[in-house]
Image (spheres, rainbow, N blue to C red):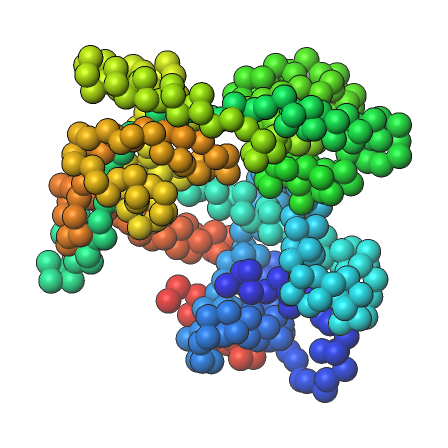
Length: 440
């Protein structure tokens, strides 16, 4: 619902021209909420989710706006909650880009708002700072909430057996990954491109932010000019960390290689082993690689496991070139939850074709795979367990139930916490909101 307010948070020119009566519906500390603020949020939700207007929807929108302002007030009181100008600008730029795509470009946005882009950003900057403050305070609270085994069992026992949902086909899998060999042609081509970019930046003909947005192959940072903030050196691959840890602040590094391609970077700030930096990545052209060495090596590894009894886990730790599963002896897990049971339909066609003929414990022939970071590789896969479609069971689906129980507990604890926070903030409900009950 908060996302739905992004477009309506600044008043476009056409909205200002309409003769619409407005009123203050809530005073929160020194701030106010107008009826039009709530109406705009409700309209966004109705459009996004194809919902009809209802009083409950309007009341819930107002509650969320009130709670957000209460969180901002408490975040400003907490000296441990800090939001930098860079964080604000990064979020604001991303959202402005999104709005421009929705309305048809910068000129159209300026026409709708009746202001220049700089004026729109200036008007929204403090609102977005408040959003980040609220998000950070919310995150600190949620991160402290855990679900115990007792919580999980109690949550599960509340669900009638005939109301338990059905879980689609699940699998547990392990794999060993090998990457294609980059040809000299692809390596030379990437070096030529990134050297030209670095020379332009170093000469002052362009900024690293401009060139990253135009040319970087890192989808996570290119839209933001190659920027990463507060990144731990242990969160990047060793080759990247080695350069980032030694590079002087504000200086463009030499060109260096990682498993993702060729980079150069500029460290903007360093706090112990945490850094802010901009970088540009030029990946090797995956159409100019040699797959055969990867396929041949995987075939040798498979033969060692199948015919000689070699340990799959040991070989995965020694030979795999996919870091996340390598550290786990080849075990593949959900990158967000750490869950080992994976939905077969979500894995995609390449995985499904590889797994289709396998029995539990079987190991596939070398097959192509698309890795989570977008790289193309080859792997051999061991099917550790196949779990057919079934009703949710606490023994086979504990991690899934634990996740749902945790989400429910977080929602309850957060609601109770917000009830407490509101008691120390001045709140005056007026007009259409006079009869609102804040704790539904």
